[in-house]
Image 1: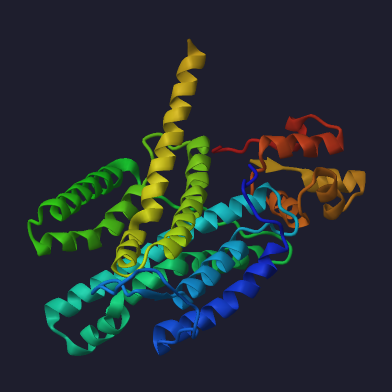
Image 2: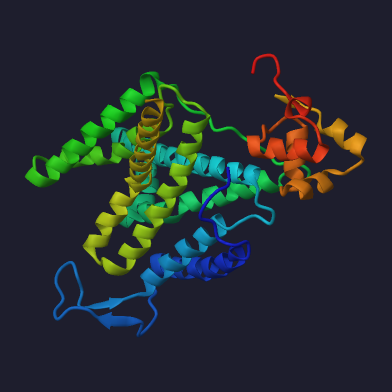
Amino acid sequence: MKTKYLFPAWAKYLGALLATPGFILGYLVVYQNYSIPGFELRLRGTSTLFLSAVENFTNELALTLVVAGLLLVAFSRTKKEDELTAKIRLNSLYWAILVNYILYACLTLLAFIGYQLKSTSLNKFIDDLTNNLEYTVYNFFVPLLIFIGRFYFLLYRNKNEFDIKQVHYLPYKPYRQIGKWVSIVIMFVVVANEAFNWSNALSNLFWLLPLSLLLWIFSTEKTEDEYINATRLDAMQVAVYVNYAILLLSNWLVYGIGFLYIQLVNMVTIPLIFIGWFYYRVYRISRQTEVKSI
Amino acid sequence: MKNNIRVERAIKNITQADLADAVGVSRQTINTIESNKYVPSTVLALKISRVFGKALEEIFMLEEGD
């Protein structure tokens, strides 16, 4: 089992070189409202409420540097890439996505508790984090950061041997069913609500979607064997790649309120792409075995 | 699954690094396999047994509970 689609080992250093100025620039943009003077283009004839005529590209540049840099660090070969380092990489990736969404779950729970208790200090804390959807900006790169930390920790913690941590999954029953159906219902309601404008409260259901998707992708198949498991780990890598490719593209093509939507949808794209690719692969496998058994 | 790579290495008098080079993996991977923490792929297991010139079953064996 060799991991496919990796960058050469030196890309790690290039990635660090890109990400560091990216983070500094990103910090200046988000917290100091900085923008590089003159680094802009007149894209439209007139300004509207949601789209200004002149677009400054500082924030696009910062996000691109951070995401591209972290991707290079995360997915470059180790000095001696072999099947075990590949396995550790994929396990770390799955783990990182899990931890990322658990952090998100804690945040959602805190927000809910703060709202119920009307606790001012808790609400203030949540407001600071959720102000201007800042944490959805974090969601652009936090999964990669967690992954890089985990992967290199497992590789270098012990000089003599690698530390293999198995990924633990929830049992098929009942978690797969719950995760799947709750996700489908939420997606249906949220999309229908967007189309028909039923009520504002219903659109809040969207914030639960990452959690039900988490149940879905972290519970096993009915028969979870070695091959299904390998497919699962591969699919996560594909999902992360596709997710960030789309993100980098839309970063340069979509502006203003449109990009806010991208930020929101980005909360669920990794699990969604994963589910799509994983089931496509599993379907292909089942077709193949049928043909051969005839 | 357990294995006696460590014993076979001693007989052949090669280090973990030698074996790692011969089969194209890192030394840490050989060590992790030797300490029974990682089950190698079939390809890697076959390569290792070829280095020792022995049949696969003489080097890797199933354990109770596998």
